[in-house]
Image (tube, rainbow, N blue to C red; front, side):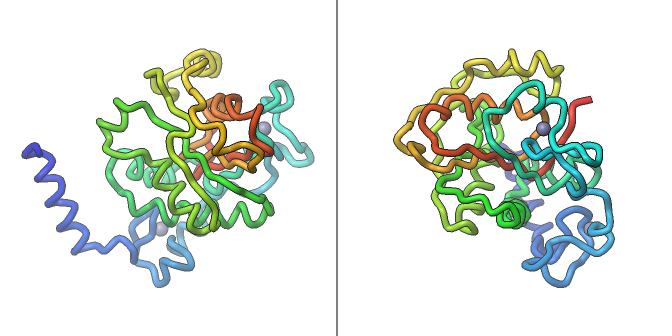
Length: 244
Ligand SMILES: [Zn+2]
Ligand SMILES: [Zn+2]
């Protein structure tokens, strides 16, 4: 272990004693009473960080009242039937997701999974197996974990269903999607996912899980590999982002 890593671990440990994670708001860090029931504070509850209001029935993006489907889904049929994303990728939610992804804040997997679980129950979606979006081996070595797998483990416990890693693998290192335009994103991902275990999803209701849903092209590419085998394909992410 490098000196830098030892220093970071010691700092994390000390911070954890000073500020125990499970009594703090997951967005702003304020003290809260009951993490289990609601892991955020009153003032964050009032903030515009929840994905509510009229949304596309397929990809869960906010749309004008009276519309039922967004322009993107209207023009290009998605390979999944429906997505749920409880938060908006902005302000405090964005900071928490960045910490979850790159700052080792793994404890956020549980409260995030619970927010997704509540939405899935509202929608009455029946799920047999959760498939986390895979990351390339190189990214895993650099980061040490795949945040979508952590989410999937917590969500599977709540849903009382199965989760399996490596059903789909990413065998091509791609550019970071957030640096690209919509068209570049599609091209960047073409043929980068491979279905390795079709028996695991055969005739099952599959939920593809990621931390953030932006254009939906990553989930779409994974769904494409599963389409000939799965019964139904749904998607979920902690937060919904939009490409301008
Ligand atoms: Zn808060
Ligand atoms: Zn849509």
